[in-house]
Image (cartoon, rainbow, N blue to C red; front, side, top):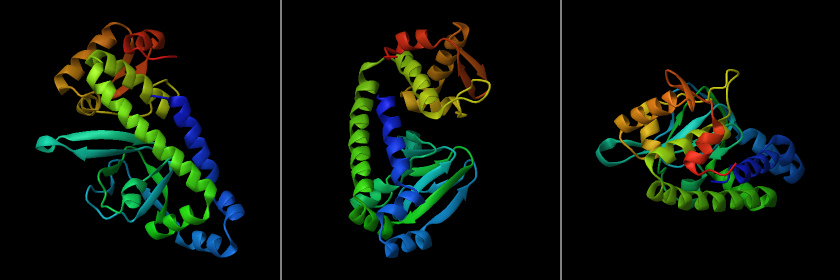
Length: 237
């Protein structure tokens, strides 16, 4: 999983999905439409942004906070698909495919977004080549990530998967002033990310803690020994 490439794409998206860029790129008429169509939407921690099966009403650009996309699997068990952080965009896949939402969007923290209605977002893709190109790159990258996820779940042990996921979460979401990963996950959520039973996740986290690889305070995790985790998860620096 290329965190460097993902970061570059997020930076590219932020450069084109903002008021200054649209002012330079769009016609005066389209820019005024952008100003009138955009909405500032806020969501509390744990609040649903959209439900699986909802009509695709538009796209959400996260200005602040972290959200997650998840889907109900067999027997109603939640499967986390991915996390979306500040500076990223979501809700576009179903919109572009002309189908209802295929996942649930939920705020993991306090989240502030810029929302653009579906018809205007599609219009932007038609008239703004810079935005269109970045979205093409983003979709291609995420298609590759989906393929990597299949390999990740099929070929790595649960212990290796936990090591890699902790490193990825830290790199993608960052850490707080005390060094803890900026997301609070239940053991069940960690278990479904790495594809194992909750009991196995609890045991492995306890083992990582005892081995001095991580520090744990409730739901919060701090990585202590990055290099050992990289070797354990076969993750390149």
